[in-house]
Length: 395
Ligand code: CTP
Image (cartoon, rainbow, N blue to C red; front, side, top):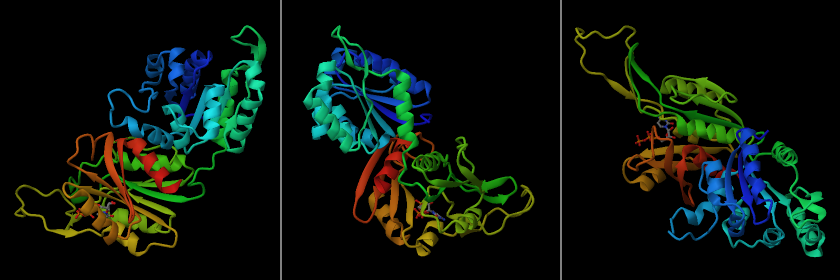
């Protein structure tokens, strides 16, 4: 159940903080990707380098780090959108009190407020503290707010006394996490989503074609993100340079005209995401044999292909969400806004080919998500951007 899931592990300042390092490993063994956020007091129990090394990712602690790196300011929001589940283990009485009141004074508590995924709280503290009216009241409040609470276990505590306050066994935490994830009804549950990806090939003859360097990475990431949000996804794709997802229904096409004919069969889907890099031109004639050098023909006559997104925009059905891309080398926002209007799309994901670490074959991207009222920017790995975009649109 946890395989392929994204978990934020929040670690607060209790003696059980050291156990969180082992818990992180258990989540990873179950196939989850884990990022860690710690309260400043948790770093007094376990060094953040431990969690950074184990998770292979920076650990979020301060909202305002010393170097004022721009990315830090919004990280709690991005992480909140990235995660499928947020587990706070161990969770101290202090953090329980803060999150029950909506306080956001460090990266962990801010990320809680920004999270759009379920949150599992594992309270650990001294038995007397756990039974105290303040903690009981705050835990009740969290329960009413929809947080999942895993009660602590009874046993020997750091104080030397016996009581209810120990972090539960990892198997109990993993079981609870799996239950929560298994019961998530993603926002795209029951929705039919069509994603197109990769380049098209316009054959001139059996061995030559016109195409572009699209890898299909962004489209595959969009398809996977939609699937993880509960959608019934069909991925219609040209030649991909990344593996096809195993758990998604796929249809392979070659040319823009194949793509058009296939998309038409699905044009009543709830959501259509046109990430394919469709060739705008195709040869007027396709030779059925290899053109020889000796043949007199030395130019190729081209004709325009059907603009599939524009066709979908014209035939849009009530309630459908139509998402297109815009690949630009200049005047990014202006040109993408024109595409939004001219093609009657609900959203355009615009990327500039001039930016480094963005575009066709890169693993990362930098895009603007435009609709008629807003412009939001996303940067980072294509997989993360896909999740954040779909969360922004559908959650
Ligand atoms: N698109 C399409 N059919 C085409 C060409 C493009 O459906 N024949 C879609 C793409 O999948 C993308 C959007 O239209 O979602 C914009 O594609 P892009 O290549 O950026 O722009 P074009 O429409 O081709 O316009 P231009 O070449 O003038 O930038």
